[in-house]
Length: 114
Length: 117
Image 1 (cartoon, each protein chain N blue to C red):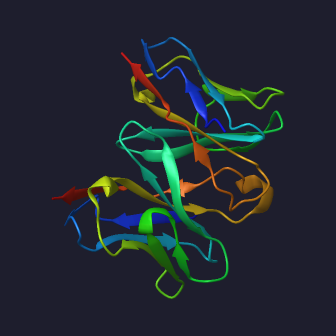
Image 2: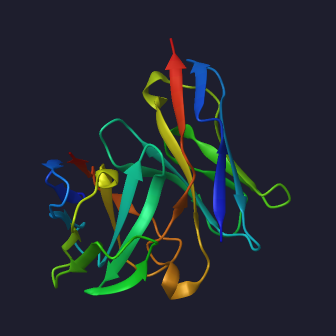
């Protein structure tokens, strides 16, 4: 079974631009969560999607948005990029049926904002 | 709000020595607790989790953790370290709250484990 796939692996953008990151979950998983990982703030929850609906959201500004498609693939978008948005963005998939479920993480997209 | 504190951002041990990574949580009720490991340039991988039941939880690669409610702790141990254990380890808690908690974990700041030959 293929794991969680995130594309692209690396991205370099400049301030003010927007970016879209993609995540393909494990086959059969209906929940996709997104996390931001930085050296200073650690791992922070962005949002979670299940069956194309956002079920849960972290404390990030509205510049961070996401969506999920009918095949469970998910994208997240960051508009008007700031230097502080430089981070590793991880997505994780699961069945989405319980709070204590195991999350399967992708290798992440490393975003650098110049 | 729940939080997780990992004591020690860096831990160094010799190969074959005991590994002890500390994690304390704050929660008014026992939450679900997890340990994840992250190898360089990779995502996170679940080592073990505690939900209910037995307080001593065994995970992959010889790791185990014990949930101690009285101490609000969930420390990770391994009797004998191997070079391949070198990685960053994260303790995490899943908030109780039903549907609004799906997919959301609160992570500690991480502990980098170095294993010396």
